[in-house]
Image 1 (cartoon, rainbow, N blue to C red):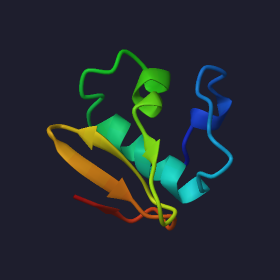
Image 2: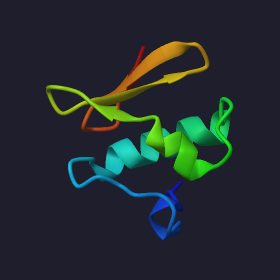
Image 3: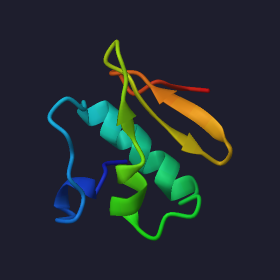
Length: 73
């Protein structure tokens, strides 16, 4: 399933983020917005980390997302 995030003008996708990471974040959002008002607010919670992965706190746990889109807690 492709993400519609790239067509949302309020969501700013950082240059360092891979398309697989964007899709993984979109999947988490579709499962649960976890209190975020919209996609832009949810995406804003994601932070870059050393080693090319990014992460966010989602549903009470930290989720790391590798450059290939693999998610782990």
